[in-house]
Length: 239
Image (cartoon, rainbow, N blue to C red; front, side):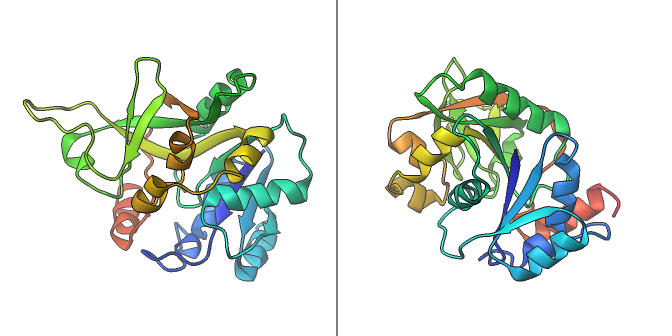
């Protein structure tokens, strides 16, 4: 099951999930990009998104406008869909219209492999980013231990190269894999101070002592957080 949270209000880019990407609303283009992998459902707080999803024959479900994070939104959708506790749920952000299927499959596979480990709350992925790219606060960086478990995520440039040039930055992609059971556990945790400071929901899991397993992927895709990102994407993909 792939669930795409699509909140209509965005502080940095109003109504971005509906912006036109090559003749198709962004959230629909994202859904179309991953629909060959598994069942796709859009979880939204907007009747307009519901109507557009119906037009394109994409399943959608209405959720509350009060959710703090996309993961909280998909949990409401999971409850309404009555999924069993061991089912795998992949959270794909609505602002990833160019995401490759191999990337989503990689997160699915690591999630499946970790289903029996209750210490692992979430599974996700990262790509290598350049030194200049790492300066961008809209590209979330992650540092991992030697076993590829996340140590911390930040909009800041981490790790900080005090004594020498560092090139191996890891850029986090906002794709998360859960079991329904671990998703429920995550959403029952109180939001954390780091989550609220960085505006990064995954820090809730780390702050409560749970693990996030990461997998390295190769991708040309990037999330669209700003109007500048949109123009960059349109230019890159010749749209």
